[in-house]
Length: 53
Figure: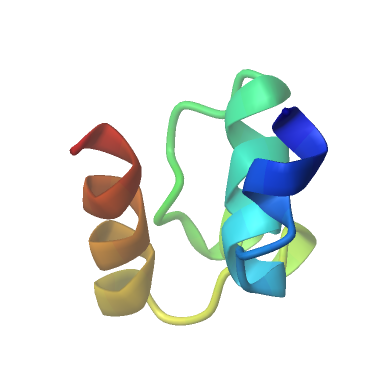
């Protein structure tokens, strides 16, 4: 089931899930965005809100 769910996600969304799994608290920090290839802070927030809903 998990594999089927992740097949439809963009690479940056999968990276966000990895960051969350790793316990990252500051998803919008420059270091986190660079390490996990999350893009700019505005899109990071939008991606996170999608997961919460």
